[in-house]
Length: 349
Image (cartoon, rainbow, N blue to C red):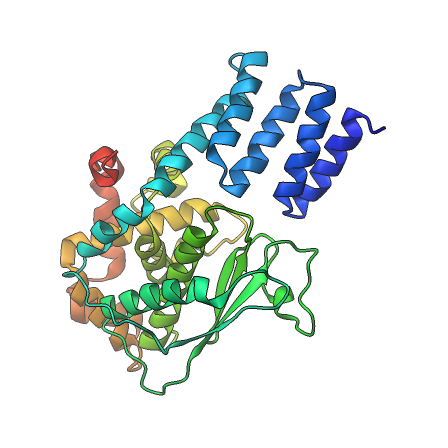
């Protein structure tokens, strides 16, 4: 007969290996032995969150709060789970509004020949489940960037198991993607981790695919010369709306010197991968969104295309937008854009 701690230790091991459904069963077994364990309910709620089981996660966290009212971790996770639930429930309705700010509605082809989808036998996923998502998202972004393949060489889209302990047979693709990452683009190949147990996986798959497909298209249009701040900013902006937690992070960091000082240049973003990389992503996203509002979409797209013609990015910006990108960045910072943004109107919450 196992003890509570033995169940929790096994649950922790399974959680670290991204086997969240098994971890939840172990936490539940431990809680049957000790139904007053606040930590057990906290971690069970986290497992359900990772599986996209919002109602179960909320129930577990509510039990933790009943046992320990005002518990800071329980309150933080409960608030986050409720916000994530709203975000993912509204993701599909919000997406057309997100893209309609750039250009008129798209006329999407029924199929796309740009992608060759690889689904390993180790993953219980039917290709027919994902093919419509691949066709819709890639052709939509192609339309936004006015991009079409000339060489007719497809992009390889490789699904990888979500659990690091489940290695693919006869391939080293899994070693290419860092353990903390869910997706990556490199040299006409897109890698995406896929967890069939997660109720949200198809939505997550669409978000990651959109993000990485933007990287691919920009790589093709710019000849690999697009600066990181624009590349990552556009990928983040086009893939999905901001989450409440990200908005809070932006507001929290507003007055920090390394985030809002007007003398910081765009080249500083993503220069220190061990630093505030998350804040850099948010900063780039919000600046790119502001820049599109200032100069419109097509000049930015034209500047990306010019980079492929041996034009330095700074020169490409001056020729198409009328000023250096850093000058726009300084204006953006000086206007205290974070305080002026109406978050509620942006997300319609």
